[in-house]
Length: 216
Image 1 (tube, rainbow, N blue to C red):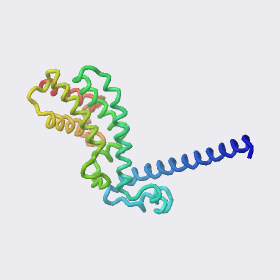
Image 2: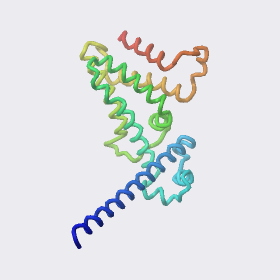
Image 3: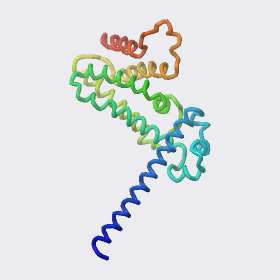
Image 4: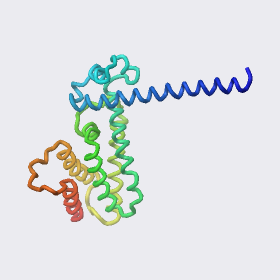
């Protein structure tokens, strides 16, 4: 076999391998998109591999080629959602003032919820056992997100704010407050505020929340 012939065969083999890998990635994405819809419509408990397979008009066996069970699918969606959120938070590390970074973190969080309602529901609202994770590695992506918040709160304390406050409890209250606004908005539970037409509830709500934090 001459060098040209060998090179041609190698190039064809690489092309075929690349195409197969792309097809595999596309099918996995198709499954995850379908699963996100099914989980949101039926909830975790009622969703099934068969439901997901029907959504993409494939057999359940096709799903099992990519995921071992629905919990692994749900976990993959969690990973994707938190990955997207953490990517949005990444630029905040360049904000030098920790309290300004904390304020910006809340804004990023609310914007993410507003623009990614499906993922937000899967990440924080829909209840699931998340059996995929071990006892030593529970909700790793959620822990990373909480760690980001706690680090900023700790730096605020070192800069003179929140003196005498427990970092864990304060971080819980801050997350709960912003999460509450996000969840009410994402689930259209803000209709009672229709008299505030023209106002952006998330923007104004965040502003008021920050003003309360400034008094600590």
